[in-house]
Length: 278
Image (cartoon, rainbow, N blue to C red; front, side, top):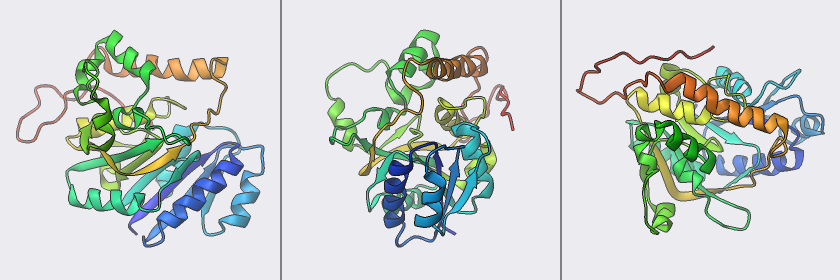
């Protein structure tokens, strides 16, 4: 099988229906499987899935586990050569999957690829290329971790950012809204860190892919529309604890003894110093 598509849903019934509809159209000429993990929704999501997408494999969590753990449940079921982790609040262009799969087939050193993201109004989201938002950018600068994310150009000045939207490039981080990953690379580096429940697990996984010696890419020749629906109200206690708690976990994991990124034909001076919780 070529592709396993994994979608985690929590109370997004209407958006989920539109998202899966666009994904099935994009997979029309691809040998694929669809795995949907419902994270204890209280709306009609499960009934909608059963009636509208009967061929999908549906996992229903008895309690809310969070995005990272739910995605890992999907990864445990997936059998595709490639795995697509995609958010339930996205609309995928009809040529997005064929284009990104062809890119990955042609770039065998790539561990994963992200894609150009637009708002429903058509505005380019810079975090689709950078991989994270301004809060994480500030965090990396303040902690000094920015020096390990050179391809994100965190200290770049100038007003030529518009070029970035249409420039295929190697990047540090693949945004979690659309992560197309090589399955054998996931097998090597491990799944998502489940301590990073809602935020930061995509940054952590992307970084571990680079630590293992693979490259991450941004692919601008197709797009997704990202509605960016927040599962928790911004500035609510739940949002604050998950969002900023993820930064604390990330800092504790990497700040004091940073693992070295593997460079082909250059031996590492020190072994990577981190553990992945399973």
